[in-house]
Length: 286
Image (cartoon, rainbow, N blue to C red; front, side, top):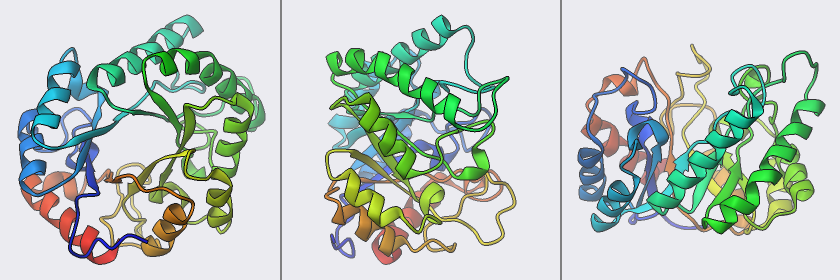
C-alpha cells in the first residue's frame, strides 16, 4: 500500500468538493482559480464536472496540464435509465456522446457513468440494468475511438429508485463482463461501497485493468442528507485505510480523488481551507 504521509502527489480534487457541480453552491471560484489553488498545494490531478466546462474543454485541459495537474476524469454522462434520464432515447444517446466528446477534448482518460434509477413502469433492478448494459455497449466503441474509458460507478443502495439501479461492485463487474469492452470498467467511491462486506473479494475479481477510479470522502454516522451531506475523510465511519488497501491490492495505482458533496458544511467554507484540509486528511487518515 502506498505511503502518503509525506507525499500527496496522488491526490486529485473532484471539483464537487467545492460545490461546483451544483448551481448556486460553493464560493463560485472560476475554474482557473481552482486549478491554480490545487497546483499551489501540490495536488497531482483534478476532475471536472460538465457544467463547469461549457465549450472551453480544450482550453481548460491545457490550463490544468500547464499547472502540473493531470486531468484525471470528467463527471459525468447523463443518467442512462430511470426517471431522471433524458427522453427520448435518441436525445439520451446524443448527450452520452457529447459527454464523451467533452472528455476527449479535455484529454481526460475516464468518463464517469452514474447510470440512473429504475425505469418508469418497471419494478426491481433487473430490467433497468439490462438497458444500462445495452446503452453502454452501444457507446463504448465511440468512446474507444475518442480515447476515453467509461467507468460505471455503483451508488449506495439508498439511491436505487431514482439515481442508480447499479448499487454493488458485483453488479458493476457483471455488466463489464456482459459488455466485454476493454475501455469499460468501474469507479470505486468510498461513500457508496464502505458498507459492502464483499468489497475486497469483488475488487480482486476486478483487477487493475477494470478499476478506473477511486473516490475519497466519508460516511457520517448521523447523515442528514444522503445526497448532500458527505463527510470529510476521517469524520465518519468508513474504514478508509482498509478500503484503499483492497483497491490497491487489486492493482490500482492511480490518483485518489476527493469528492465531497456537502451543502451544509464544506461548501460553505473558504475553498482554500477545504483544499488544505483535504491535503492534511489525505496524508493522515487515508
